[in-house]
Image (cartoon, rainbow, N blue to C red; front, side):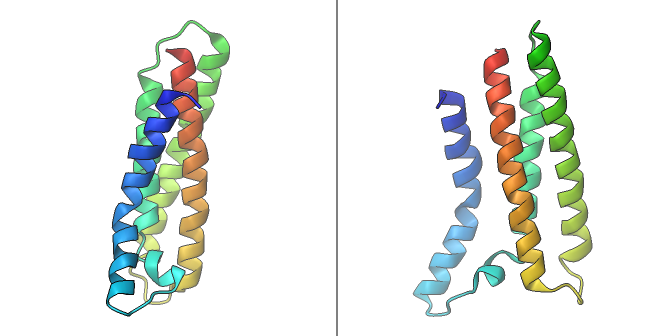
Length: 132
C-alpha cells in the first residue's frame, strides 16, 4: 500500500471517526450502551463522507499529468466524489432533523454512503499518487 493511501487512511478516515468512537466509549463508561443506529443516526457519517469526498476532489484537481488514462480516471473519480458530496449533503440537511425519519434507516443510509466515500476517496488518493 502506498504511503499516500496509508496517510489518508490514518488521518483522513480514522481521525475523522474519533468523535463517534469517543461517543461510544463515553456511553459504555456511563453504562448507557447505544445501538449502532443510535450512535450514527445523527448524520455524523454524512458529514464525514462529504469531507472525505471533498478532499478527494481537491487532490484530483491539483493533479498535473500528461497521462490520458490518469486524467480520465481523475475525471471519473472527481465526478463520483462531487455526486456523493451532493447526495450526502442533501440527506444530512433533509433527513437529520425530520420528525418522521427512521433512525435505523438513516444510520443504514449513512453507512452506505460512507462506504461509497471510502471507495471514492481511496481511489482518488491512488489516482493522485499515480499521477504525481
